Image: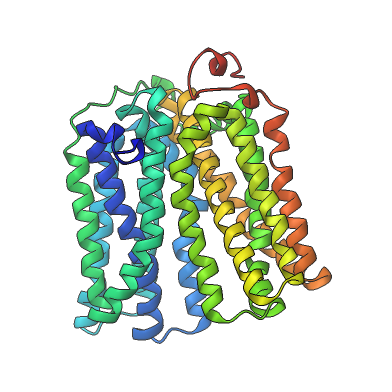
Length: 423
């Protein structure tokens, strides 16, 4: 078997960690489909109510990530993940019960979505901060590759399973399957035997959360490796979401593609994500982690720059071109994410993992609405095709901050070539 399908999975603790992550990821994807459909089909929600529901699910990432990061650094992470799984399962039980008793309302659905969203933030920050506990530093790329493979598979298959369950059993009862995934995830996580190192918190700072948040942010911004990764990632995310809303208009209106072609194009994102999880490790072995990050960012922008060429082609060649480019783009995004995450984990002390990851997530996700608004504004002024070109150039430009930093010369997530560059 290939390394991606075995390797670390021989180790009991990592296997349980990976299985818990995999099952939980499927649960998240089913929730992503089921709750909005319950709002739309069962609750007959208005467009405004649907928008508010989405905001309620998304806002916890922006509002509480930094605070969760401090908490994750103060406390053992595995019990947090188990508790987050259980709380999400209990919260979701209220949906079928509420429908059965005819007491489910949109405000109650908002509360449930918020509880699920908050605990998803807790789970994800604790999860990415916990990996260095169960694997060695030189195994981080492989570990992240396997976890990213699971996440990609969950994205591709989980939403399809969610749709099928809703079709067969109705949306409220599909939630029962979702509840099961969170409980199974908790069981796998509870089976991990390795104990976390005790977290030492200076006596004078135990109650000063603001000081601890500042300490985490200072660590990120004063470390030239983390700072370069943060700036590159923020710029990449900004221009990704400049492209995102305009791309849909480009393929549906500018190219006037049929829905079947649009579906095929978007399916390539999942295929590319799986491909990226497979090739991330081999790319690092050949290029080193720094050059792999530069290459993946630049290629993601380059293939995005090719997509506007589709306006010059007949329909079928245009669709094939976009499908291939979309797949490569998704693969390179996953390659970059696996490697930048592994590098971050490798150079960050265990007592700062939560705050470092929370800071990265806060800024990385904070530019998403800015990029979307900027893309819509540019699309209205200069048109869809020029906006896609601007976005693609921005994506390629994000690699500049990695090229002109010490990150480019790093070969592995840990070792002398990494630690000597820490700021």
